[in-house]
Every structure is written in structure tokens, then in C-alpha cells.
Length: 417
Image 1 (cartoon, rainbow, N blue to C red):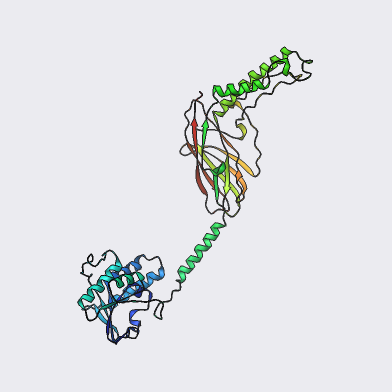
Image 2: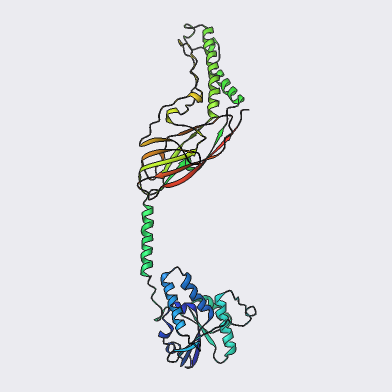
């Protein structure tokens, strides 16, 4: 690097943080100089203190703490300049540069710019011995070149500290990976509606008068009255009047059936829920606890409403008997058969006026949804219904903690037209 002389070096933060302690480096030999003066600026001390307080790496925090202690040890009562080894002196600057940052296209809030400003000010005051910036940062290099400031860019050399990870941090990373693998091998349980929905809207709408009349006309046109459409051999068994009387009774009953279906469709909401497992492991001994608002009229297996069935068209030799009313207020249904699922009804009222019940599921296979027994909610046609939440908590011996969540039910009620 030319004739051996005295050189001044402005140390960047990364030189102090990632290379050997300054008094352990043979600066005269490395820089081919007789004497070397090392400058530490206020911004570098500020950055090292920040590493000491905030760096997430325990190793770098420890290194920063070591640097601060070493710099402090070089300060004497009467001077900020000291000799650290033969031919090498260390000077700690105690003031920010006084140059015009704006005029030099620099920003005081940018730490690299403050180092550049120190170099500019030093060179203005020491024209015979300009300061050289020593850094590993290409960004400072670009700014120094644009202002014709001398700079040395260090990379890997014999003075660079080993980059081996801190043993404690390495162990922590291994533990994080192990926990992540363990979590990935666990079940991931949720309760959803069909079609993977967390919210479902139901429209309670009775069939309009026009819709019922259209369906009745369609049924009427299917079995027109008269001997011309009477099945073969029927005329020999019953008279035209008898057949017509039975058909008229059938239509009267069919009209009643349409009214009952309309009442059912406008008052009953069926919640078909699924237990999903999107994890990578099977869950055993699963229990699902559901809570719903206490004011809801919930019907379950033993009293669930059954949709009305249409009456049968009279056949030859058959006297038509109108069916028993199948209105939703007094319907009974049979218990659906679902493998590995038991149902438990909690009659007590929980806090905040909630009612609860639970499903006991034997096994929840991963990737295969489990259909839960339906929940039926009967609404009064005169009651203004709204949305409500179904809260769930899932317990299993294969999950670390109970899984909680919510699904939303939206109810829209429309009046008959």
C-alpha cells in the first residue's frame, strides 16, 4: 500500500463485532504503515450498545458486551486516546461531525452517513493524512467512492471470528424443529358445516300460495279424472264415481300435505356438522362439547321433527284413507345409527344462558371427515329470528390442550306471500 507512513483508520461497527479485538491485530503489518491510529466514532458505540441490548442472538449480545467493556477499559481519566500496542493508538471521538450534512448529500438519521461525515470532516482538518474507512459494508463503500474517500473493505481473513453458532442457540433451534415435527404429527381437529364452511345461512320461507297451487295442478294433471285414464280393468272393479271420489280425497289430502311441508320448511333448521381432522395423525377418544343459546328450541334424536310424507295415489281395490297429520309440532323420529358416536345431553343451564351437549366419537381419522348426528332447531313462525353462534370444545387424548372454536348460524325468516 505504498510507502510506510502513519495511517488513520475509522473503524465501522462490524469490524469491532466480527473480528478479533483491536489490540490483537498487527495493524502496522496489515496496512504496511509505521504507525496506525484507530478512530471509534459515537455512532459505532451507539450501534454496539444497541446490539448488547436488543440483538436476538445471545452470541452477538455477548460479543457486543465484550466490545463495550474493552472500549471502556481504554478510557483514562484524562484522555480518550491511548496506545494499545506498539505503533498502534486508539482514539475515541466524543462529538458528532459538524459538517453540513445536507450540503454533502447526507442524512443525520442514517448511521452510515454519520461515519461518512466523520471521514469528510477528518480529511478537511488533516489534508496530509486522510482517514481510511475500514468496513465490511458494501453500502458504505458506494457512498465513500462517490465522495472520493479512501476505504478498505474487509472480508474473510485470519482476524475474522469463527461463525460457529452459539451452542445454546443451536440447541434451541433443534428443540424448535423437534416441537414443530411433533405438532405436525398431531391431529388438527375442527367442527365445521358441510362443504368446509364455518358459517351457514338458513332461509326460513314457507311455500307461497302460487308455488303450492302450481304443484297441486301438476299433480292433478298427472291423474286426470275420467274413465279414459282409468287403469285397465279398473272399470270392472269400481264405478267412475267411486274412482273420482277417491282421487278427490287424495287431492284434498295432498293439499294438506303441501301446507304441512310448508310449515315444516319455514320452522325447522337442520344443522349437519362435521368433525374434521386436517392433521397428520389419528385422534382417539374424541369428545366434542357444543354450547348454544338457551332460548333455542333444540330437538334431538328422540324427538326430532320428521319431514311430512306425501299421501299415496289410490290404487284399484283400495279405499283411500287420509293420512294422519304430520305437522312438525308433534312429529317423532327414530334414532339415526352412526358408528362410534354417542350423544350426551346436558340438561343444566350453563353461565350466560347457554345450553350444552356433547358427542363422544371413537376415532377421528386424519383426512376423513366424521359426520355428526344432526341437530334440529324449531322456530316459532311468529318469532323474529336472528344469527347465533355455536361454540365448541374438542377433547382428545391425542391433543395437548382442548381445541376451542366457533361456527356461525345465520337465520333469515321470510313471510308467506
